[in-house]
Image (tube, rainbow, N blue to C red; front, side, top):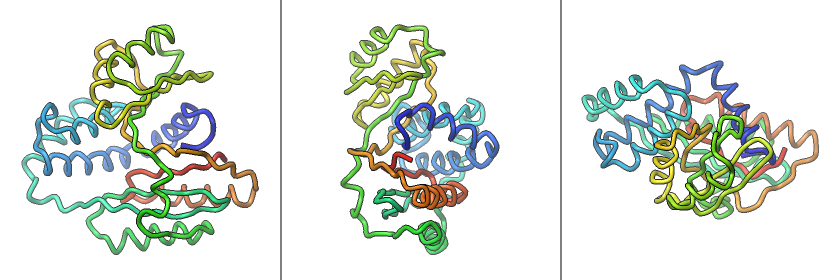
Length: 242
């Protein structure tokens, strides 16, 4: 996440993704395939698959597309050769960056990620070099304008379902959960017909770093853009306020 308005940042991401929705769906399709191979096609008994489906729905992936992806993955599970790889490093301005990838070619992906850091004046680090600065959390963002519930009612619903924290911003509500409680809270909101802009288990920085220098901010954005354009990259987390 970057900037103080999480919703504004997510909207920006979605606008970029809308221009290349096919790529977004392909990325999620890979995640579905791996989740099905690891835990089977039953969403109710496969926690990882349930998380990916929640992410797919938040990205406006049609239900029939999700179902087809699960059925296809169940039939082709022996042919799924993707693996998750995580890279950590430092960007300009003292920022910390974590890159999660899903790839069928480690060498290609590692070279591309390293090149993105180098072109933006960053440096790849070793495993664990920056991950200790982040916490794994479930994060659900709700658009205020699309939510019919009051802030108090939404907060109580989320907390009753197992959420850890509730934050109100100018344009949105943020619900934070533990990874284990995420699916229960998401289901409670879905059953209450609460529209979610974003719903996923993510990595949230413990503290943010202000990157006020224009050159550093430009270089950092270059790293993020290059990573965003890489089909092997599933998610990028950083602690910069640009």
